[in-house]
Length: 159
Ligand SMILES: Cc1cc2nc3c(=O)[nH]c(=O)nc-3n(C[C@H](O)[C@H](O)[C@H](O)COP(=O)(O)O)c2cc1C
View 1 (cartoon, rainbow, N blue to C red):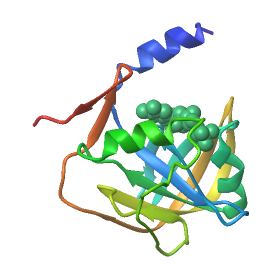
View 2 (view 1 turned 135 degrees about the horizontal axis):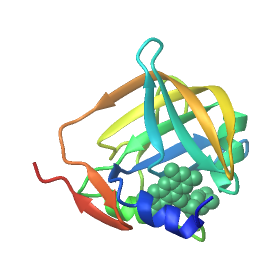
View 3 (view 1 turned 120 degrees about the horizontal axis):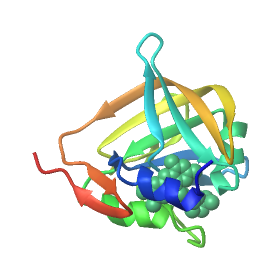
C-alpha cells in the first residue's frame, strides 16, 4: 500500500467535474456534500455510482432515504457551492439555495448545470467510503460551462 497522502497527490492529477450530492434526512432537513467520485456505470439500466465517506453527515441519510441527487456544478456559481458543501463546520449549507424535488424526492439544486435523480440499488464497502450504486430515475442538463477540480484547485474548461 502506498502512503495515503501520496495517493491523494497522484489522484489529484485526474481532473474531474464537481458535484453536490443531496438527500433528505429522516429529520426532514436537506443534507449534501461536495463530491467528485461520481462515475457513470450502465446504460441499460441507467446506473451511476458515487463514493461517500462513512463519516460524512450525509452518509447515513443517503442510506436511510434510499435516494440521492447528483447536482453537477457550473463554473459561475459552482465554486462557492463546492467550497460550502465541502466545509464540515458549515452550519447551513443550503442557505439561499433554491431546491425542488424530482421523481425520487431527493433535493435538486436549481443552479446545477446538470442533475441526476437516483434511487439506491446497491451499496458496497469501499474502505473508508461506501460505494452507492444509483439507478437514474430522472435527469436533465442545461447549456453552460462546468466547474473542474485538478490538483486541489478549481478551474474552468477551455475548449
Ligand atoms: C472537490 C472535492 C471533491 C470531493 N469529493 C468527495 C467524494 O467524492 N466523496 C466524499 O465522501 N467526499 C468528498 N469530498 C469531501 C467532502 O465534500 C467533505 O468531507 C464534506 O465536509 C463532507 O460532508 P459533511 O460536512 O456532511 O460531513 C470532496 C471535497 C472536495 C473539495
